[in-house]
Length: 394
Ligand code: FEO
Image 1: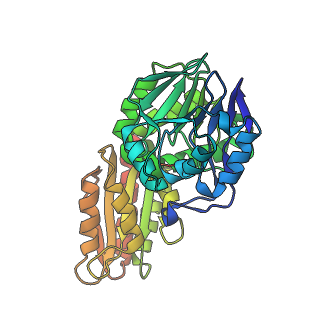
Image 2: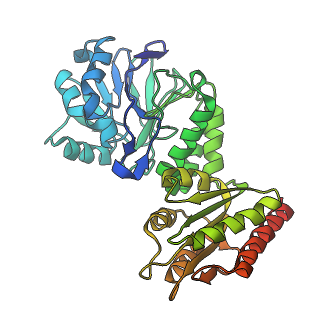
Image 3: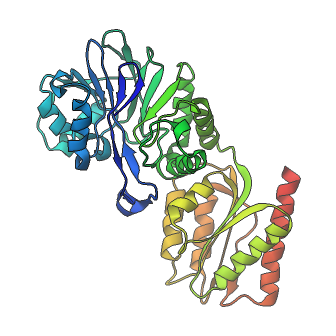
């Protein structure tokens, strides 16, 4: 339990050992936190709860500050079980508490907590709740991260309780951004955005515009540390990611059965490297896709390759492209490549998916079976040509 400001406490828990978030879809190396906040005023307010596995620790944290019976209001910013699955237990301890959340959140809370009714005040964007010295403002943020999501703003404290937005999967016993390793924090914030929020870029831009009107000193998310030193920086970083302000770097990503596609990828890299352009080579069987997506997020150029097996792409590269399919943007450039033995359907499939959200650099480059010396030279030449094109555009 930590003090953010007078009478504003962080009462969440640290999950040091979690390595798979959303089951296998998000590999996290640093663990995470489930943050919740307690505001003491004429009405005592709990903002969000925590994952059910940690409800005992959560109750202990609250009890160190007040008797849970004295909680008057529980705000549910978001119903995903990492933030709401201990709600039933908390409600049992504070039977007089009234819950505030969006309409969609109410339905979700009833279903996830398997309860029939709940004292629930449905709130809409812009609505405020007076709790004494403070007035708490609710701003709905649907799809950041789920349809029910909202954030809560305390003008008195200049704190935005942002739930999933601005989060990081980063377990620490520190509370603020300036107390932890800034490089790890930056890495985890980028990975979080890429894997949780990227598909909602256009919605994020709209909501960030609303936030411009608020004086925000601190952002208190539901995962990771509270932003107090780099508050403006992380908002600016979100604007950069959401508006596709990209870096001149190349993500070369491939999955290969017998090293042929891998050989092509390496020659693209060589060609780019001799021209001094930043690029990273990803064999998807060696690097987790969540880390690859983090690199792709701010890369202007994607080269994506796969062997063809049974008329399909190989499975890991396929799962990356499925995620990319829902990114609605044409700010990037791409090239599909790969080797094949019969008809090479995977390369066409990659090209088609990329055509929805990137500009084609040139026709897909494919080779039959194993690339010849001349074909590898051509890959090198393509990489070099791309790098020269990038330098001219700088
Ligand atoms: Fe951290 Fe969308 O839950």
